[in-house]
Image (cartoon, rainbow, N blue to C red; front, side):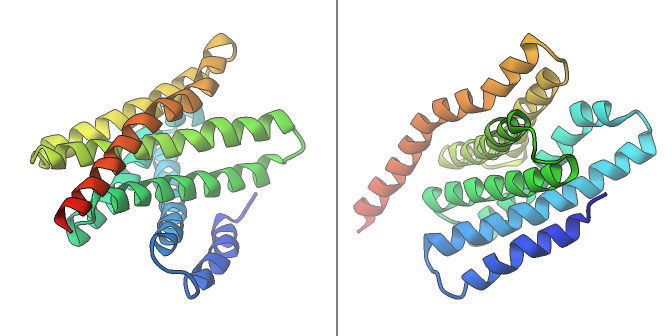
Length: 217
């Protein structure tokens, strides 16, 4: 048994203190990282409660419940940031990456403390597959929101579409790794491959934002 809240406090306190000494995009990233860790804890509460009530087992929860719950929980702070502060594309995408990284890091810490870190293969899978998957899924929904905002279609259907994209990716990963064998190997490679593919449109979106800022100036 581990105490997730205590782990969160242990990791979060140094990061909170660091906010006193940094500024700009570095501060935004650290703050987004903190939000991602808190989001992970809340999502675990909700998924655990549904698992307890439904009683269908952890595998069922991991494939059918966790992707929906976790992606919705990651979407909510992004929507709050988007509608309340109206950030530029660059700042918004940075916040999404930070949130995904915080979510993945905290989840990995909890799993490793619960299962041990003696198995190097397991640790590498947690870091390179599961960890990257959370960053990619969060980046998918943020890039979807950026695109629908650019086309002035930031409405309920646009938000739901972006959420469906990230949830599908997350659920597909969980489904692939739930079965030992070739499918699990495909699942482990999928996040890294998707991250490499997303790097191209991500840079283009950031590049367009920079060009727009130069034009305004």
